[in-house]
Length: 125
Image (cartoon, rainbow, N blue to C red; front, top):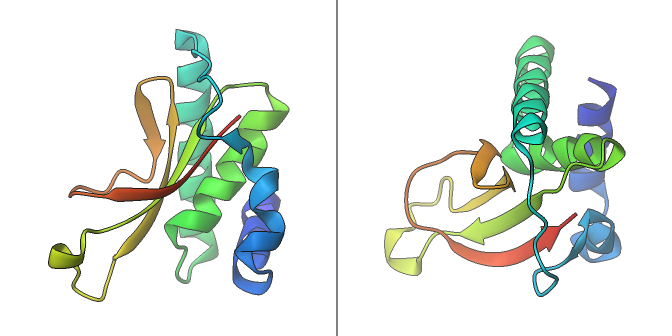
């Protein structure tokens, strides 16, 4: 819960440009493969974050959840890819036009939201 609260405060109060370098390497860096046990551990951590958000109540958007997860993955040395994306202009409705998710290996472990997305930022750790 503490990591989720820290991530929420970071996302809501500090401009993205000042903390984006803390998210990981640029998208041009070579991706690291994740083992099956690492994917399983990441999946379990993501469920813990979802449960903590549910227990705390209120609105918990995807970016604070993703930031909290990558902090936990980084401590465990589990490779990840964070994606921040926008819906294509023709599909925007005013809600859910921006989205963030985390992949570990080929698996999206948090932030699975259907639809087309144009990735505007990607970081790897």
